[in-house]
Image 1 (tube, rainbow, N blue to C red):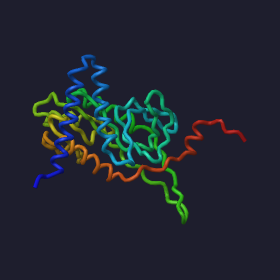
Image 2 (tube, rainbow, N blue to C red):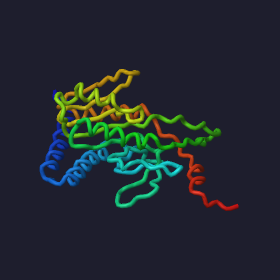
Image 3 (cartoon, one colour):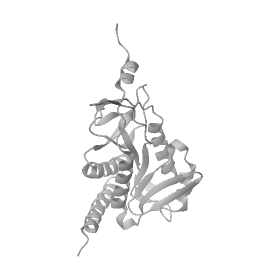
Image 4 (cartoon, rainbow, N blue to C red):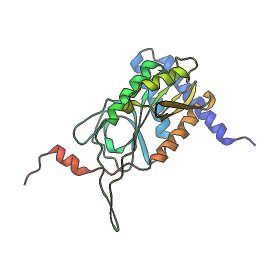
Length: 245
């Protein structure tokens, strides 16, 4: 009997790979090519993530006015997230609502991995509040904050092998708040990173299932994070100011 999961996985793989290949061939201008690539990754996540999540190109901001770099893909809580500002499909997302951030690039190389780490750090450095949650019997204490996931998504890799020692060495160069947790190079495979003290471990997939493997690895990581903390809106009120007696 044919394995339907394999069939679906390979169909999804072929569809996105074809879209990204077409974007690369049709768009000579680097900005247009980059926008098309981001759009394809965004469509993948928007179409297949559970409805509790939203994925957008966005800025992330905090209650004291801090703001991240522009992030190619922010995965954030759909249900409880207020979009603080939305200009030309560029929302500003509260830091408390963010689960994961991704940088999209055409290829894996040292420059792009380090750049992705810097983008991730621009989100992780922001202040996140956590408020008590009211329930029928009283109040739950504020939830502890989980680490925001960071990753990189590409079509291929400039390294040979694509997900080998060169990638590991570059990941080791990243500062603590720049660390990448997960990624995918479609023609090479998906990967997940585990940091054990000074040792960095890399779990990889075969290229033939890179997309579906990445997707399930991401789902598992999101599941482990649980739910984002409740935003302490009083902190935002205090930061905005303008209160009168």
